[in-house]
Image (tube, rainbow, N blue to C red; front, side, top):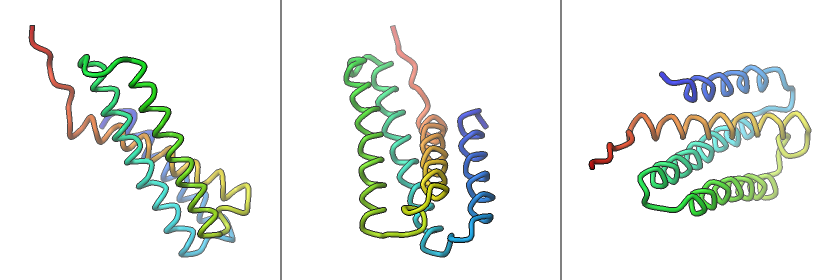
Length: 126
């Protein structure tokens, strides 16, 4: 188990403990937090894919940066859209917003770690 995976799991465990302490967290909020993990994992996979492609010389460092920043922007836009279209305690309280961020970052780190686990960096020949 690598450090990125461990930190992602720790963040999610902290998020679970934190969520259990908040009074306004119901089934809807737990599902929204789970969606944050899933979106974070997808974003992490895409980011790690871009990093790997740049290391292999398949894309330029600028394109890698564009992918990494673009994925973060899309993640934020989707999370904000979810909060607008599905109003909940997470969207209306400071604690809920920070808790959503913890889950999304935990998912992002898990996505990075999962990409490395299942798609190891190929060796360049030459």
